[in-house]
Length: 253
Image (spheres, rainbow, N blue to C red):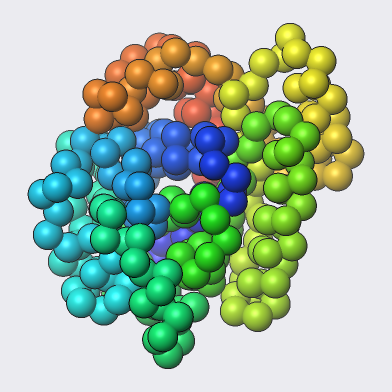
């Protein structure tokens, strides 16, 4: 049965989707069968794996609302051991639709139950908010990974996300745990960066992944080619760092 990992942070622009895409790809390279579910209406994880959002028949929206079974939405990507439930702009309406449904917090959990045994990992890329889409992701996840930048606003956002995760655990998913915190856009030369890292080590030392993700041009370029960074340039620093995080993740969950 697959381990389900949600990538969540209500703050945008922190490298959440970049981390979800590249850790997913790295797990595939390591021989794990991985399904990534794009639960963000922007669909960046979808395009990040080279899927044309305009040509999608069934997306995560149809799966959540119950218009299509999860199996019918799964697409095989061209990358090793990676499948995807894609997303497009239709998902933007799901927040409103879900509020009128019974068991709205468990729509995703119930939908993917039939395919959990087909994969080693199911990765969920959440939107940058704490709405019903993220609640659905956390209600079915075994663990949550929090990508965050080394800045003080990110520290404030981390506290909010920790509180939300705690509430979801209490109300909907007793099995939910914080799998880890991935530091993104890291620059060890900046005093502010190291101050934030020291704060994180004080309170979340056991949750921090050992390898931070540096600012890297190749990481920014890869989505434009519709591929994870490993397939764009597997020798670049970003590809090596995400591979290290994926190896550590495989030992955690």
